[in-house]
Length: 397
Ligand SMILES: Cc1cc2nc3c(=O)[nH]c(=O)nc-3n(C[C@H](O)[C@H](O)[C@H](O)COP(=O)(O)OP(=O)(O)OC[C@H]3O[C@@H](n4cnc5c(N)ncnc54)[C@H](O)[C@@H]3O)c2cc1C
Image (cartoon, rainbow, N blue to C red; front, side):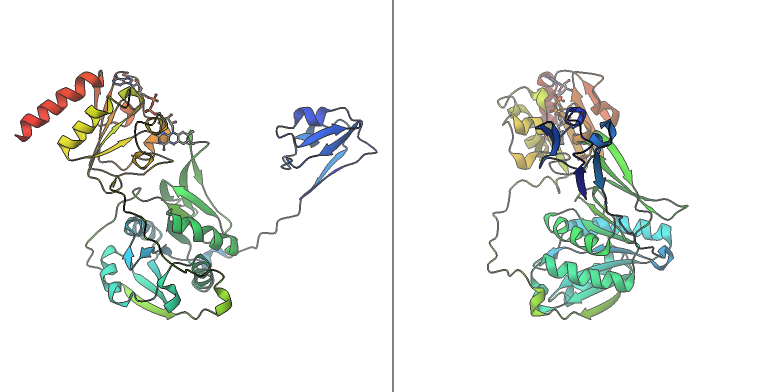
């Protein structure tokens, strides 16, 4: 894309620089000059009274695809040392529902070096087929190789939907594949549905800083790719299912490997495990101070729960960042979530939407948290939480 100023026409009136929201155009020596901040938004074109500005956009050619050639739902597995990431089982659960609705197969795709013995076990999570891409070099995760092998496989097999975990690994290789395939990719989906009339995948995700939920479709390209954070969907366990296993020995060339793993340094395991916690007690700004968090911690302790909080509590230094729940924190799916002094901003709610039971304690009866809470207590948490602790202690003893 290029932008030009016709100096013969430009009068240096300044309408363009006044209108530009990015300081992308300045008036120098009575003529408009484009700066590095220009992002080609085109506002200057609209306001220029003498049509002195021109943007040349290259026509983006979209390859016309026969969408009916694309069939099936794929889940791409992520694993470390042959241990499958829990998000994969959750995606198989949701992928199974989508596949049923579309009356197509659900396929689990695994890239690895020595996964042969674990494949049967994975059948229990419901895939109709397991595609195992095997190569000694796939012992480790290499983004380039994942992108290369999967792109080739997708070209050949033409799945219509591909689900990938929104983990650091998934976020690394998913866009590379989407770019190579010219396919649409929606990151961090919190909802996936099928539009029955068009068979399009409706991909819902928070947008504009989480203030809106957008539902995105990619009606002209295939496959439809989506990443989903851990904890959004639930896995469907213990299926009697026996998947058809197809092994593909994949031959990479030396030149394919543009990076090399020299050493793997294990990160110290965090003792915080919010994603798997069955009970979470979380505090928000309403807790009042770091000191006051002691009562929230005590309630968590009595219940054998993990401690969490809203982003505000992290920003105020009351809690560690790894305890933040929400859009920019962890996504959790406990059986019981107790929110103390949390207002229920959308960015917080997207992180707890899979919680089975939500209990909210808030002194403001109009707080949005009460719209999603199954049980609400209106009152001062400084009075209510100690009463709860006392009652629970009595119950336990
Ligand atoms: C891009 C972006 C990403 C974000 N990501 C996240 C995220 O991941 N997680 C997140 O949590 N937020 C996130 N936020 C911030 C979010 O918008 C809210 O600002 C935040 O969740 C509010 O936190 P809070 O509920 O603790 O505080 P507040 O909104 O200030 O609410 C405090 C609540 O406590 C109640 N209260 C006060 N005193 C008492 C008392 N004594 N007893 C009982 N109740 C009391 C009040 O009535 C109020 O409802 C994000 C924002 C943006 C823009």
